[in-house]
Image 1 (cartoon, rainbow, N blue to C red):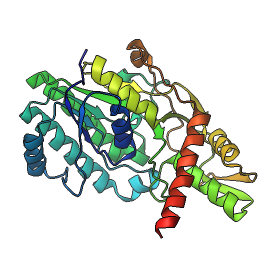
Image 2: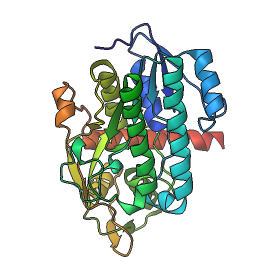
Image 3: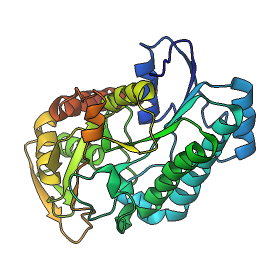
Length: 316
């Protein structure tokens, strides 16, 4: 067991969806939360990261900072996704080792697994086949982060662990249609179709691929749990254990939003990986299970989206 009580805990990437959820979760822990936004600290600058960490001396690091995006963003900006994420991970992990951080948890992604991995995907599937081309640049960077944590464990005895979450959604998600992931993109499309009275909503691909989704508050709770109880080089999967087709997801979102129109599917656009379900047997063995159902999570996310739209309108 690792205790967070009385510790200085750096949530790296605290303004992002995952980082902000971890900050909310840590409010119930007796620890001091450290943050540093990009306006204060450029994580791609190794010297700056070293200086900040030596000045603040965190005991624990939640490594949730990353450049993220959907299929379109990965396709258009491969160099940015690979370089930025490599630099961010390398600088924070190296800095943590140099200043004597007691423990670090790196957040990766389920996209590190091969496109045609055995389903559900066990942790042992890593590096057993080709990646999904639509997000390979991000995946390669995350694999490098996992391996870097393992390397520092092996060479320097650092208690650095990695967690691989499935597809995430929730408060603070990105709803920009040019860079968002499937669930928030669908939510925005369906909402705008409802508001504008559009009879149909077009969706990329066939609607057949199966995806697993986890609410970000569940992920944050799992991260705090793993910080306390997990210490192993294996990058542990974090998921809901449930999967849904893109078509069924769109229909569920429409039901929550109150949209009565129909969907059309553009099969000329890429589907991505046909199925992507994590094997969470190892996580379950540590005593953790998710609490947020997909419907209730989508409903909460939609309320946040509406509140955010209203707040934006007031500011304008």
